[in-house]
Length: 178
Image (cartoon, rainbow, N blue to C red; front, side, top):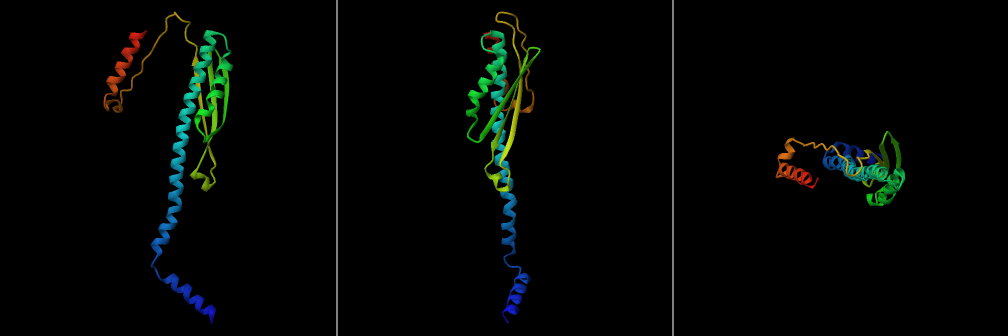
């Protein structure tokens, strides 16, 4: 008799549609949460990649300056800078690695790291790989002529506020210093 009541109860639940919206809404929260987590973690990784690229650019420039000025080896200058600044990338960035190479006066630094995820861990993605590369060439010795090229962004984004006039003023100021 109890089995018949359980079947009737189950059949009754299947027939009644009340509350089905709440169940569907609850089930749809899972992918929404996963996508929100992916967006937040991707944003964090993008910020870390930007900081890593800045550090890599600085390391390549340090190598080029070390070659021009003498003293420290270019490789030691580049890798020392990466080692010294790796901690500034933040607590979510780990495993920073750097490689240095030089050819024909060009100093190339390649870096990579892992960015730990927070919300994406719930779907099994524990970290994101980021990397950057920069190449620098030693400039002419002090006092020798140097060619400078200015590249201006003429897209619509430069029309906002005083961006264009600020860029022109910055170039004029630089030219006055030279």
